[in-house]
Image (cartoon, rainbow, N blue to C red; front, top):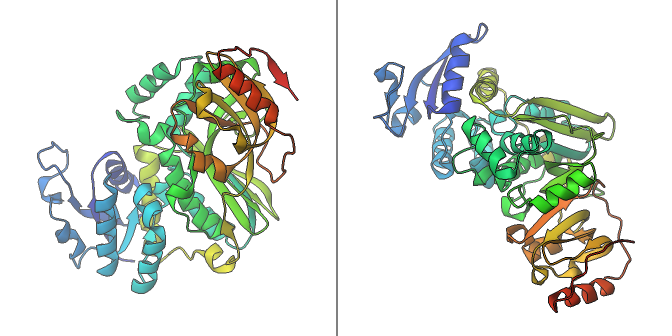
Length: 425
């Protein structure tokens, strides 16, 4: 087989990791022939003739076999990927935001051009989760997917619960080590995990879901009150991307969750990622690995490049084989909801209440509530409200307890009366 000639867009952390893995691989025959960059004035250790600022130079070069797109700008990445496919080149990308926002369109372009787009590096770094879903689980019905898919937030939460650091200090430490960006909002607000979950839904359940339709809550709204509740109950908090199939419906979301010390993912620490898959035949399977970093992600990208050299492409088997399944937010979760201002909470959202605590400083309610109602109430974007799943896994069970009593308690609090006791029902 002739050596693979690669055109690379972007030479940041992952681009440099790809270059290093290619040059240190003993069983891959290929090289990066040209690299398109945005800032030519930056000092780089490679020869100058490898670099260009002209995207067209790579897209229309007949000697390049594969285009690898590793830039931050989602819209620019979409243009590069689309043009490359339409110009007869297969593509590898690690831009999870671009892929999640345009996945259905990108699948159509692949079908029209006959060229492939692979993106293993966009989800969970070195963990081969997409290829596993496509090949190993391509024909087995999955009932659940649950993952720690963002290394930055997992590192921060690890520091909070194992080192007892406050959130701000844990975030600062993550930034100093390069696990979190100087602007960490994409990670700590759950957006990064949301984009990855959208991609996983396509391969696990055959669903193309718009990112804005997923309930997404990150870790930036976790308060000292919430942490005190966790510590008092001997719990930790993990940020999970979750999908569960019930009948022909699949519901999915990104939410923090309280976990016991016995939870299967409790020991996934620091920047590591893990994905738990549950199938009808194989039961639960766990994939664990480095979720970020130059070399782990570079290795995932190289794996895709190598696969393209053998004409591999995703078949989206679940989309073809499971046409009846539909995404839905009309499902119940059991959640802990904390809030500073009672005005922020409409208790009609709860179907069933199991615990409540009201005080002037901070309050919380635990109960079952519908995902769709939470989305409509926009709690996920309210700085005065935080949502954490309880240790109970999501189910369809409907609660029957009236919430009328709680309305009276909230009204009393609004009128200046302090309701301090914790009441369990």
